[in-house]
Length: 515
Image 1 (cartoon, rainbow, N blue to C red):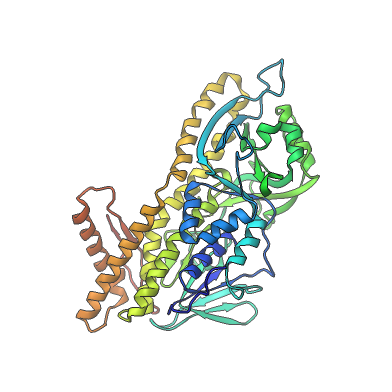
Image 2: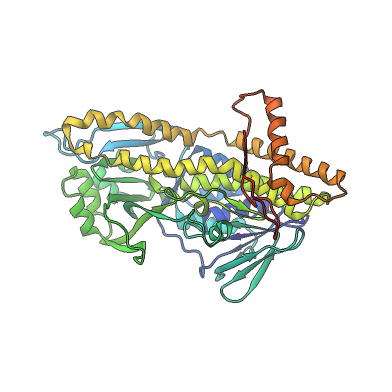
């Protein structure tokens, strides 16, 4: 368990949502001795027993957040996606023909299209429920409060507590609020405002069927080598992927099928699916895939896949409130990197909140100035990359499910697009998360230094409006440009929006983009 949090910190943080990103963010804050409480609307942990995987960049972030989180991953049964192949110990993603029977003498033959190498233990797969069980043990026992459905968040004065109001009539107080409450985020609505069209989830026209089956059943359908390593079987308007979890004793299988119809607004997005429907949809596919499907449960979850691609957020923060993970940038799962992107968020927030805690201890600036500045830097560092993932995940699905896979005259055309798939995958895996942290801490330090100088020059009277209208941010950007050289790609742009740092009751009308 992480050391007792909050003993030395003047900062108290409330996290809304007890999912994977919420728990990991809390672990990062607790590790840095920041008092943190998670408020969860459910009666307990409620993740499905389906799989989730962490890529090389996400694993590096986990280690920086808290080594105990890395240990929780291993204790929960994480296994490399290719760990069972002793002659190929590196974790790889493999894309393979799941539809055609190219060899008439061997109907089970499947052509390999692409293999990307993540290195030794490069991608770790684990059941979601097993991971949650381990993550909650990392935190102090009183960290999570269940049955708390958020209704509103009210900010007070510069040094006053934020008030969280819940559906049961109770309230809680904190200095900062981080919404990790998923694609249907209430926190996001509070950040954007009730009339905003941004942040509206939209249907991707894909349904997923996630489940797990005993590894021996997967082996009987696919053979040892295929079953015990990640494979994504491609075909027209559908694809099916699988990888080992639970110390290699189980196989996570997810089926994706395209649905051209619209999803009614009043229809639940989580339903009970039927194996018979999947069998009918895949009736013309390679017999190896039909055999695998025959081992799926007769009933299994089915999800209408929604994301935030059509209506992305213009900002992730407002004052001392911000959103992270799916609440900020919910993506479709075709990259397998949505949780990893949330982990990157968690690392930046953990580091910036630790810096904010130290700045508060100096007593030169108000809580509103210190925390709002941290969240503004977080927004600038994280928004562009995380929203790229939402778009890229849609594109990856299109590549997986090309109709050309069923047309022998267009096989080469379809295969030529997989180079793009490889480039997009490595953009995620090879991300320099250490540079991300360095840029975040540098930008925050320069912003706070500027505010402190202004406070000294004005006897502590630094107006939030002077931050929002760009005076401080312009100075930071100019200073960094002079230091790095004009045109240097390392020069960080600082983006803000109206009221990004404005305190309660203050209005700002100027949008600033400095680069």
